[in-house]
Image (cartoon, rainbow, N blue to C red):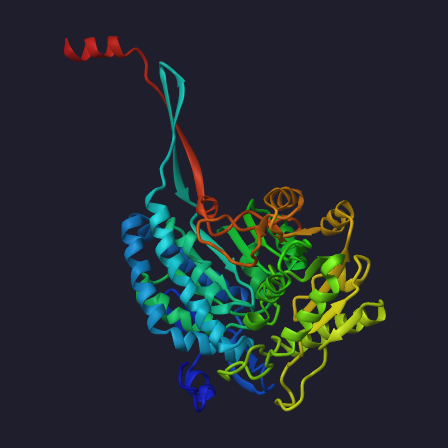
Length: 505
């Protein structure tokens, strides 16, 4: 275990300036506007970050557009060398990035170290995948040749979510960069510190202007979405914001390619033949409580347990939850940190109150634990039993440390309940019966289904959902191709024999 930091706030925050990266320079916003950064573990204001105006976003896009031709001309091999340098810098700065996420986001620092370590497979994987990219020759007729090639869009806009700031700041730009695009990235305005710190690493590894980072709230994001030179956009976040991005992109008067990774209210279906303790461990792992306090779109927040093992499952889950230590995120002994903000604490607490009012049984948790900083956003993980699909906690995405347990005994009713939402990101099936496992996985309306596992991502495997949960796929060849435009070249070959006779005569 790493030696606890005596004063991580001073070392990683107070002694540093956090500036945007635009065209290889570290800058404040033109208008001088800033936003306070608040520590979710204590409620204390730590520092400020710039708020980018539309002019700042324009500067970033201009820098990206100017850098793009030379970046594309490097080819995959040249761009891969930059990836390799960046990977080394990320590893060298592992502790800094992890601690910034713990301080800024509230996620336990040990989990954030694991986040940084997971980035290695993406930093290695994208160059390898891109080196295998080929076009197609399409048979047409003896007198014609058709073939395809790919070209980057140019400037890509990327808006990332608050819950894995450094990991998203590292991995989400990679497929657009390896394909020859340049980037303007905006992290969540709630958790920007590690992404701003990454600007220094991008600047060391990539040519100026290839990666530009701007910070700010909805107005900053809107300026990026509607900019005429940003033809390709990617967003991770809430359904509501994703819908607004689609609308604003259309209203800008420019056709834009947009991919969205949005919300989930994910079903974990437990059959009575499966080992109860293993299923309980799977439910805890799948909720991401000791990674990001359940603030994850892929968390299995609807646990649907067969009636035969229901009571035993609830009791054992309650017992294991009671052992989790809620605490300051940068304390090495913390299992569950604070939620990201006071506003989000109020939102999640409101859902807990609604669960009780709607008749669900609050088995444990749901309160602010004692003995912790008074103004921290701490919340004891809440476990609800006797949840039904009509309850708010049973149908709406909470995005917090709230586990809802449903009882089922009829298979068809369970499937109808599992599929009865407008979200369909992930699901999981827990059974020892191979036929039941695969038939149920096929019947669940979700884009990614695990069998006897949950929430794990594997590079090269397309991740994304159905319905309002997703548009497009990530972490795979599908995503890489989405950052390229197809071009078809047609050639009329003519009469080869006549041409040969003319050439040789």
